[in-house]
Length: 172
Picture 1 (cartoon, helix red, strand yellow):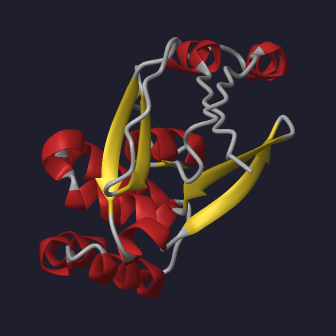
Picture 2 (picture 1 turned 180 degrees about the vertical axis):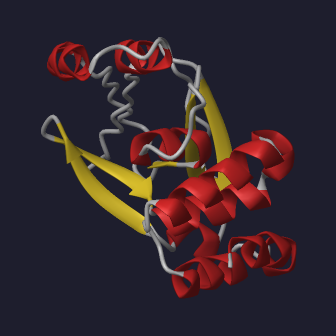
Picture 3 (picture 1 turned 180 degrees about the horizontal axis):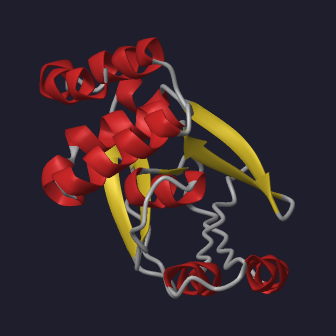
């Protein structure tokens, strides 16, 4: 059975937060914001990754204008008719490690976990931006969304432990 990949943008909520709207207005708008769901029938193992995953977990101020997804290396790259896709090809353990399955509006969505997403941001720091990776690291640590051991294990899986070592020392 193919995976239905659900892509959602809370643009209204982010816009209200950017202009420091009152909390009562934010709560009302949260109910009214509809998610934008797409069904990719030819994408059985797609996983929401990088900036889209950071946005899902609430660890970034970035608003992705395209959906960042990871697929297995050697797999056919999907063509989207409505939403812009940014496809990354992962292989081996870096593709399968840290996948969480969430249900969003009754749709099964695969998203990388917080520590795996941060490690991936450091791996693709030239595409994502080092400032985004550091912001996610600081925000995730501040909110206690991961332990140092979890992050270090995913840094080894993504082969960025040497790169992340300096930034992890900064947190401690």
